[in-house]
Length: 291
Ligand code: AMP
Ligand code: ZN
Ligand code: FE
Ligand code: FE
Image (cartoon, rainbow, N blue to C red):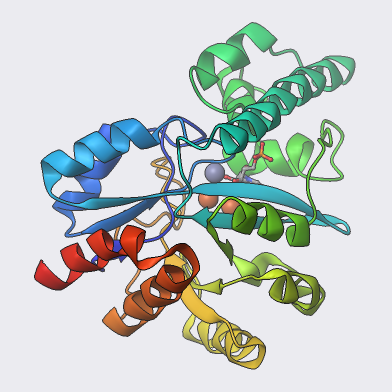
């Protein structure tokens, strides 16, 4: 277990726990510093901050953005963003709107394939969340069209599969700039999954990428060594998190269940402090050093 977890999701995107439940679970696991990184949404942050204050832990207000790379996508995490930044929130709301149109598009494509699920049901499943393919996948499972999440993606929803619908996404480089422009700290998520990591880093590092998610879910010691080498070569920091969603899927890790050394945590917070100013970082560091 680790005292920090830099990657987690709530019902405000495709996680199953409310921000309050997530914070309590994390705190119970010994996490003192939790980044809530919902996809394109900071709507869960106020609730998470309130629950964290009750539990005596700290929240890093964060997001996860999907970006376009040739033939694939890359996810960029943005930390220490301001939930009250109106321009940022407007942009994120626009991204969530584009997810709605794309969700409807996927349901239409499924219909044309003879796979019936209702858009109403997908919306119900998503609730207050930023709509995503996991919600469509859940509707597919419910209707008996597939047995598992993985099957839903493999048969229909993954990029290149028949019900996939593209949506407007930034490039990794633009996402990095966007996060920095809003005072945040950009980190490349689950990089093992990116085939041409060098190409992504070639553009994202000069744009200001701060770290690489080296410690993640089922990454093996060999994966970690390889990714640490990428981080070292590029002069960026290693980071990590559980990416907990609460689906209970294979290989899921609980909040806090990604060991990070105190040095990894402290170096990232120090670097973030330089970027965003000591005034905002100090409370987080304080809570880490006293607890
Ligand atoms: P979206 O944000 O709508 O593009 O959906 C992306 C989310 O779907 C990711 O964050 C994963 O949680 C999930 N996902 C993507 N690809 C797969 C896959 N092949 N199998 C299972 N889940 C996936
Ligand atoms: Zn997710
Ligand atoms: Fe991701
Ligand atoms: Fe994630």
